[in-house]
Length: 97
Image (tube, rainbow, N blue to C red; front, side, top):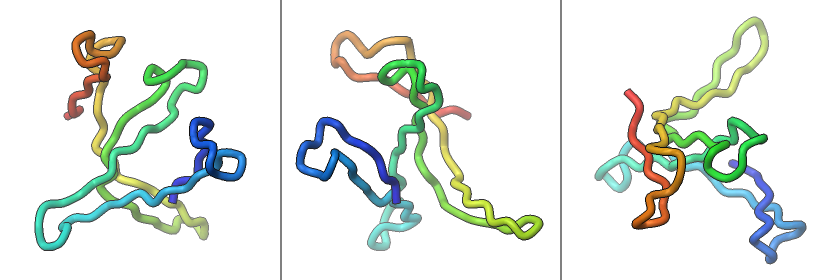
């Protein structure tokens, strides 16, 4: 579960929200479904310039020397250009290999 503040959502208590991140290798015996997440990698940057984009492929945890580590395996994306596409106004991303 991800908990975050959403200032644009005035319906919640102090704009706090939570959502579940879904990782489903087979949805209803069909294709897989992996949620896309935005990771705040540089809080000093505004908007998309401070974010990383990824699909979450799996969550897992392991114990090392008595301490549990919770992890996620991600398929990362790279931003194409330094600004949104002028025709659509949307940011464009491509898969990293």
